[in-house]
Length: 111
Length: 124
Image 1 (cartoon, rainbow over the protein chains, first blue to last red):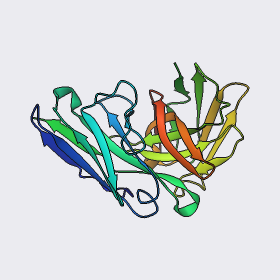
Image 2: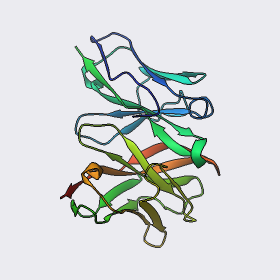
Image 3: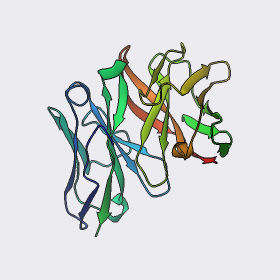
Image 4: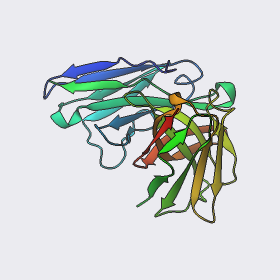
């Protein structure tokens, strides 16, 4: 069972705005920043959002992240077919000496 | 451009030790700003962090795997390695290595970039 909680699935039609939630605890999201990864089918994960809301170079501004308290969200606007992928949130957790926790992943389907 | 490449046996017998190496090219592994991490993904399942190592050899491990994991680093060869002992079928997964950003001495952050991953199957 993952320490960060994400919905297992999400969907939207091209052009729509979709959000994916990620819920944690006071020792994880409540105390540290959240990162998001995109995993296209058959490929390695790729950093999508870091430090809650920062986009690495090359990531379209259609992708945005936010954090409030012990929860975070990833928003994708202007949904495109190539956005169909698995999305994972992750954060550092200060408990047990410090460790990384991942969400279980959300499979995004573009209808 | 920094690149990471995993290497090692694709098949390991149950109860034995899984050993993988991640070779870093296009940059030095001897950086004060980064740790170097291992993450795995069982077939059809989500991501699980295994652990991360600093150039000084200081490590952080997943508490649930700590008793079986050793991560080491060789700065002269610009690579780091994973050993996972007493493997079972549950350890069958794609194993990824990645650069792990360091926020402070007590906090790590994002993984970027990632290697392409290598599938390790545990046979009975």
